[in-house]
Image (cartoon, helix red, strand yellow):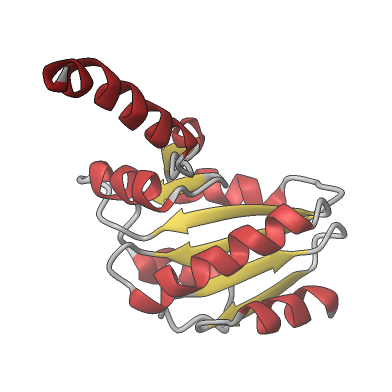
Length: 163
């Protein structure tokens, strides 16, 4: 009887437990490697929503800390379109996709493959020193608002409400 429990009942109970556990699965089909020119196109696309582009990297602790705030605010606000722009090394995209899977990232993540920052940082914002995290907000009318540095969830909500 003991062998029966171990061989049949335990795997069934384990399967039921794992099926009810919260999923950390992310939306990996929303991952792409992009050029800066592609990002420029994204910045100029017309939209009825406030577009939020958060620049981050897997190795940046403040970036990782604030990501759940962005995901939560975007999930609660249908007037926002959130995209994470990874500054990780594009030769190792698995680092980003692995991070997405472990953290359950639900919004699109694009890995920017242009490491010549001096060439394009001012095109994102003349105020950007190059430090991350950094966030570009684009209003429906095309006006850009840039924020450099980590934000709390309250600060993020305040920034969005001021747009």
